[in-house]
Image (cartoon, rainbow, N blue to C red; front, side, top):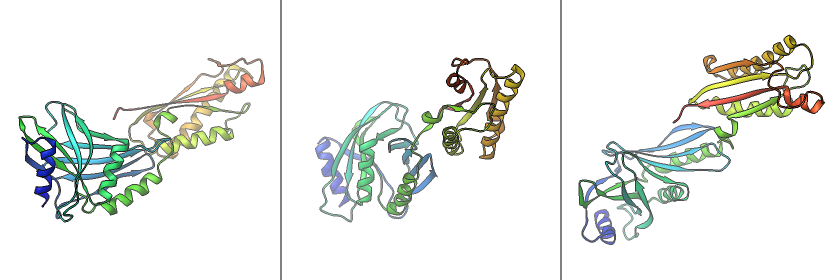
Length: 289
């Protein structure tokens, strides 16, 4: 029955093509699992026997996002178009296949589906359907390869995936990559806003393994002696370093620089200006994924 459905579907795709190779997990080897579950990333994976891997990925952000990646053991030697269709399993005879979208598979890269179309794929899987990609074989344009996602054993892992999504932080790396923390006169304790900001930074970076460098630059106003201000700016930056180490950051990734009353950003002749100058600047860098 499944073969009949697929062949009928492909007649609409192009009457001269026939399915050459089909890849999808069967009842015995269909596996779904959540491979990453942290406050900054949720990943739901699905191995496709003999073909490769498929996974859905959501990252911490102000907006809920979703990307789907289809990874082949043999990357595409040239860019090609694929048709994504929701196909019913063989035990649902009479249910028609439903077109989802056209997808571009780029040369030497994986297949990507993003946002609304990716959510549609999850919805089809939840309904027991098989989102399936159809594309021409690069070495024989008269033949078609199909790669499908099996909905068998999907629901339990999907529930776990949704629970992970509900606990994602409402901000991403770009939101915490650069911060300025403020201090009271002669103080090393953070004000209320800065404490919240530092907690926000800490909650994120302790889960991001790609953080490469955290630079802490301490500054003071011009109130007091130059040596006093240099020591004060150092204490402020070192206190932040101690906090980051406590939450698990490696010491070799944290760099401290003290500038005392140098490099003012505001006028020291008034209170508001001095408040702006009493600061620790946190700059965070991460390796490209």
